[in-house]
Length: 238
Image 1 (cartoon, rainbow, N blue to C red):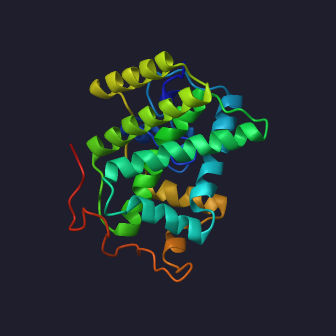
Image 2: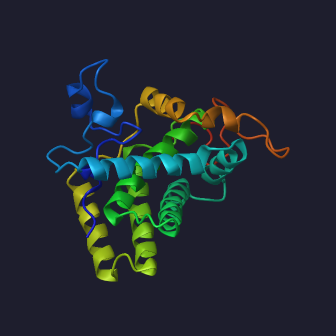
């Protein structure tokens, strides 16, 4: 069975609770040093290393080329898609595709790492689309809803691949929903400074990429009007 995503540290993006952020020593602890969920058994160094490499590969998939970064933006800003559903579907299918790609390279990614990465990718994509649209599109409830929907989708994909049984996938989703009801999920907007530093460390610049036309199409500009149904400044919430 997958472990709670909080088993892993904040990875590359710094997804940490406010308490963990406050406890970090300014100027010393980077986002990768912050525990996502308090009182969670930490990952081993080997597990954390595998998690970080897996997430970094996903970021390169999403943002590594300007045309791909624009496709990512367009998928999230599609006016015909529910924003929470669009976020959940893109996160789940991207994590699954990365895991299947790793299998083809004889590098099987444990399911608990996939679910942990899923939470970070949901947060990252939400921050990305908010930065390029210039508005806050997801509140806390919407982020949690997107993660739970994505977890359900990823669970179904893991059943199809044989990595989980149907019962295991249902139990995992139920446990995550119960954790959300208790306020224990750590899904929250990332620290934007940490996000920018993560991009710099990887040598990618997705925000600049979507400002550059690719194939003749002008992508949304940071700070510009959103093309999605929430243009006008409202947040998507419960």
